[in-house]
Image 1 (cartoon, rainbow, N blue to C red):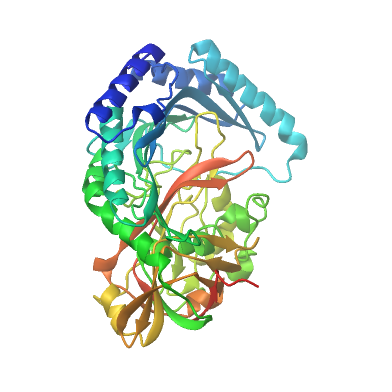
Image 2: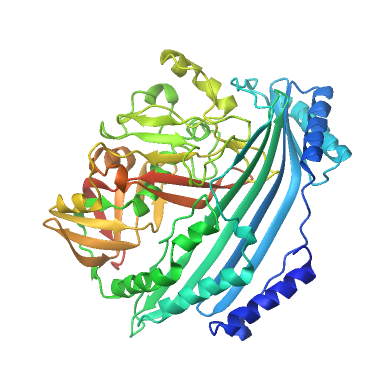
Length: 540
């Protein structure tokens, strides 16, 4: 399918096919169009273009340069009840060149994939680097990296979702919607399938030439129930975590089979008891805790944020300055270990090589409860040379450089940041059994956090009262408040390896101009003692 006419034809076939199944009202279907997709040049041509860009940058005065030629594809199908409300495909191909001149960065990009096109982008990058020299405070120094002259890598998908026809995707969603709508009290269902495929090529003047293919999948599904007197509505969403896999993950979720369960949970929330404010022991499911990790550990331990280089987008960080917190900040109990990695199969930030050609290694951000390391790029790693020297470890990037497009400048983005399992082979039910009075929270909900990631508030999807070691009735209007170090130091129980799960964000924003990144956070069910719970439904 390469033309708008082809897409319209296929879109019409999709609508007809779904209508024939009896689950679509064609009068309300909207089949959007997509522009014709350009094609990536052959592998040999890509390599030749990358060498042209690097040679041009060097000839123009760059001491270092890297180039990325990539194809970035997105495909979505969104539905509501028995309607397809939107479909869209985007397809973007081009080259971005970064040049380092006299310790200062410059960047140029082009969608013209010819020798003249990439050479012009390289010259532009060098010119911008020279122009930026006047604003330089200290010259950029890059941590060493091994070169990979002919590397390839592919993420852990088995079925390319871009091979699945749009009518097949829509039919699956509409069938799931129909099952949810059968539950009495359900009024609305929104569902979607969102796929990303990136073909990334990287080369540097240090000798690396790397080709990677990355696929990610998101399955948003939200059910809304409305009370009979229209005085209340409740939703259940976020039951399926985004993942760094393909169509096989969608099939494993059994959307049609699970839709009634999610719908019944939304209906149950209508008659749930509104929570009494107070302090409770909280037992947090991995489907909820991942977001708390993301906001209170992931973002505060980005080194650029801690140093004040990232401030306008969600603030700086209380984990600063580095010489006051590295090895000194007690983030949590001794059994708390938090890993940064880009290696976990299926995680959304997993990659073979970052956008500086670094092959990432796993590292401990929190080690035995103490703050141990930041997320870094090649430039940032040298800022912590004193710390790595004191630990007798090499100064090297943790592989956290990423750009969301060939036309975006790469900068520090979050790797997978995960709470590691405890040594005891226990799980969710064991934590519930060990709790006399508390609240169990499943799924992520609303959240708010201050500009230094210090004080926060988190909601959730489904809440249950815990009494004498057993799950009781459902609660609603629950949110808890926290001060980050106090919260994590209140953690007294965590699950073992068998209870470990991934949660993810498909679109995490950072930077100016803003960029979007996907990231996962693995964790185990965990218990936190005497946390302040508020009632979000209370009216003044």
